[in-house]
Image 1: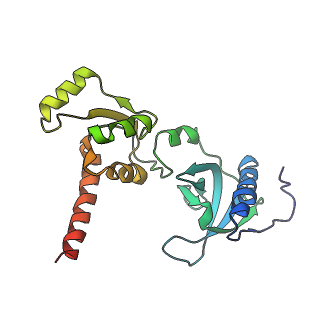
Image 2 (image 1 turned 180 degrees about the vertical axis):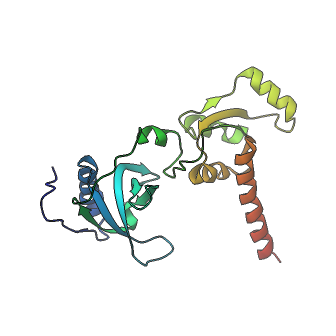
Image 3 (image 1 turned 90 degrees about the vertical axis):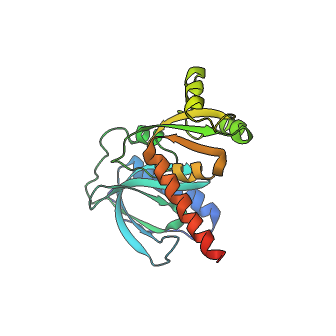
Length: 220
């Protein structure tokens, strides 16, 4: 275990994948288990300039073949996530008071796709249609753990209201909309159409509009 009275050590990471997947995860697991505030030095994908932040670490989570540390910023206690391959060094701060998260944060992450948690957004009941071409893919690889195929009566009702969607199937998920969910729904193109709510439909439509404008500018 971590000796909180020992002199803090800075842990640095090279481009060695083995080092990232062993020392990095082990150190963070220790700080999370021992409730130790850490100072992260990191850089973003768009900027190599190094930044620092004090973080109260709560969870380690893997998504899309990448590990993330999730915690609260010391400044405002906002929940943030940092990809491990974007972190340059970690310095433990055992002299600082650790602030545990109120409630079960793990359950909150069960309500999303990916790792972007928007604390001010509620769980939405999202209904979507999937074409015959993509139906088996969605069935065998659900978009979210809550995914269900709509009952026959609900399906017939939607087909009456949406006559253009004659084939395919209707599904529902109950989760908090976030960046990863919208990106995943968009990835199916016209083979997946969100029926409700309008707020999620609008986010997808905005992305499609932006893509259309950019492609149109390339063709002029």
